[in-house]
Length: 406
Image 1 (cartoon, rainbow, N blue to C red):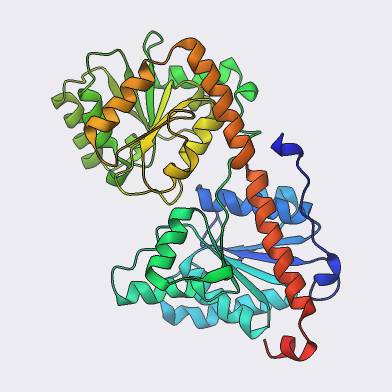
Image 2 (cartoon, rainbow, N blue to C red; image 1 turned 45 degrees about the vertical axis):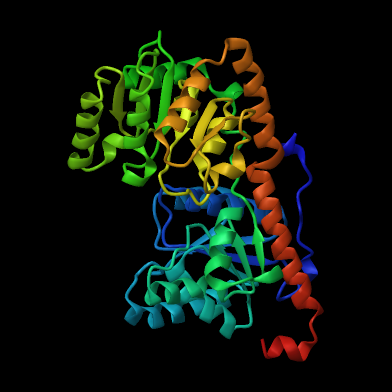
């Protein structure tokens, strides 16, 4: 089991002051999201590895989770996009780094990188960045802003797709660039840990019928997430039994909600789809689904939904591009449709609907094992700790004069 795998640990003598290594993560804010959850998971892993975890952000409701695990949080204006404010914030951040005796500064977004990387370098600290997005350069200014994420001692891409995007636009980064794919908390997203009462609570909250297969798209209310594409594909297989729930779509602007509703009705899907608000208990929501779809019309940098659904043993259908193509084994742990091809998506959905109960049970075991083996949070954190440890060791091995001029 992945959860019992050995943890990578720091060598304390590699710290700046010969004591516990201090890793400072910098991100815009601590609100709901994959970047934020990953930051908290890494903070816990840093502490477990024998280090001290510090986070700098503009704050948010998830700060309390850092308090619970014994990490330190500092509130600074590291998300403001006005360059005129960066100098003052950079000076404050530099003082925090000195006070905390930081060894490594890990930035997770572009504006924090512009503020934190120069401050860290002025103190001779190790710098790391994680590129979470598609990293597209639409103009010169965008390229300039993005470039600061590459001005670190090491770059982490969250998927092979993101690495390809970086290298296509900025060239080969060599050993300075690593791929550390995102992970899922396999203890939280575990079918065995979700009670029937939690599932019933979700089903009742969205009034799902109990006698029809449930096709679910959990996503933000954004056009690129593929809500319209999914509805159009479902219309092609409307002769089959199913009910589609678009989790999170009801959180969108009224114009977007109206457009989806009108499209579904126009396609003849009246009574066969529903838009709901986002949910706090996603494991229970996924357990209520038979098929989970990720029909993003532009490639996902990684696609956490695919991992979470597979961890819960759900059948997954996605387009064969971006991060989804890295986490789904076609025909074994899910199905990959030709990107933005309605016929291909409809065919994959029909195939998933045709899976028998016994086949579903077999696939559930395989998908769960697939995530445990390759995409657990534990593995993601362990690989990142390994990068920290190598950078600390390399700095420790440098001649003293080199360190002073770093």
